[in-house]
Amino acid sequence: MAKKYRPTADQRWLYYSIYPTRSSIRRSRLNGTGPQEVVDVNTEQVTGLSIEYNPDRLFWLERKSGDVKSSNLNGSNIIKIVSTNETHANIGIHVHNSDIYCANGKRILRVIFSSPTKANVIYSDTEMIYGIMFYQEKG
Image (cartoon, rainbow, N blue to C red; front, side, top):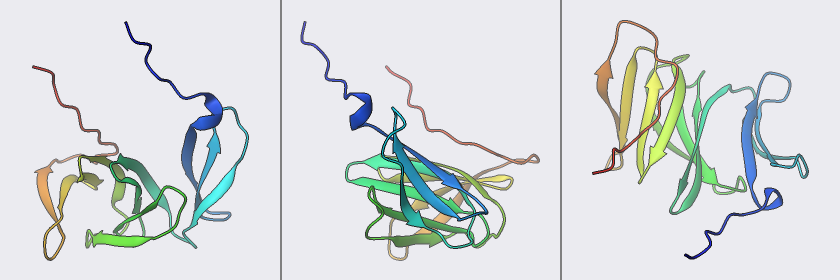
């Protein structure tokens, strides 16, 4: 049986956001070394982070503005994907195979890459939705 490749702690990153002291997205190695600022988001509150591995992109939600943004994993090439048109509601995000799912207040949005890119409501609830994760059952 072939041995599965598993990167060491110094080859893996933990991404996190901080607010309000110096609002930014940061990362550090899993062994606690090499902390660095990846994206300065000014005074914005980043409430959700996700990574798409093909291509390697970091995605995040900005709570105050309602924007969904993305950058390379090192913070370069920042782009605005779409505005959810709802301020102070973005909380959770999960990206899977270029599909972006967002918890936006009492709604779940799916961001469709088209011309123009837009966010569609795929579920509404009477309660606040704080987190979201995509899972595909096997079989």
